[in-house]
Length: 330
Image 1 (cartoon, rainbow, N blue to C red):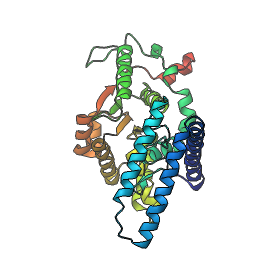
Image 2 (cartoon, rainbow, N blue to C red):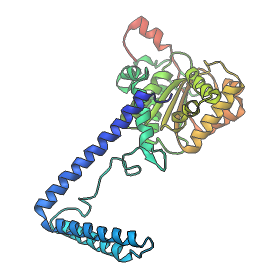
Image 3 (cartoon, helix red, strand yellow):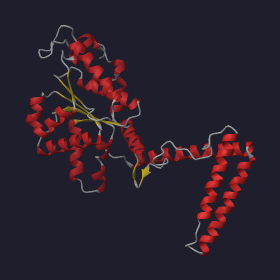
Image 4 (cartoon, helix red, strand yellow):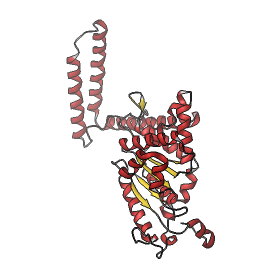
């Protein structure tokens, strides 16, 4: 899911606007200080004169010793800070400011995309995807425990469907508070229609609202993407999968509904293992049992999920059927 040209240009315009905003803010602060503290202008003139002399010296002798120049700059900087503080301003009031101190609002660090760029990229991809409309309907504001029975109980735990759902939401809230921490992943399982996908959508919407980068894929869409990245011939196809590995939250919906083969099993292990090592949070929803998971995707995938994921099994009647019979929303 790469950015197309229009999306990339939109993202870069955002960075241009951020830098322009900060430039105007600095100009306004500079004019304010020039009016209130005339001594600052004199110090700035000294910096200009010293810089000009240093440049001339370096032109005449590329190996010239400029240590005195740098010492003078430090002294002027200290005097400027002292003047600002004397007049009630912070010492860094005339320093440039940035939304992202890592890349200075360029989107790049050492020639690579900054973490802020990846977050903006994921947010833009989400905005332009079908998930955007979906999450406006499927979120915690529309989640109701009324669809979960007090009488249907788990044979394994003895807890009712409602109690199980309430516990699942508590774990979802805890998950949201730990995004980016070690082993913070969810494996949502259970029969068709018990609210697994809905709960994963609720979590994703909340994560996006908290400014985390999050991406949603059905299992089929995900493995189509990974196959295209693996077998593509262009550099673009090789980088299409990067957001899948780097986003703060990845939601894989309906695992097990895709066409499963050895490629899928290998790519699933590679993806899950890499995200575990990077402390990137992942949510998997599936109708598969853990035993079925082991048989389809190999022991290595089974081991990663049972060792690094919180397992949540939802029970109850098919909510979609209940809604058709009674109306309403989850």
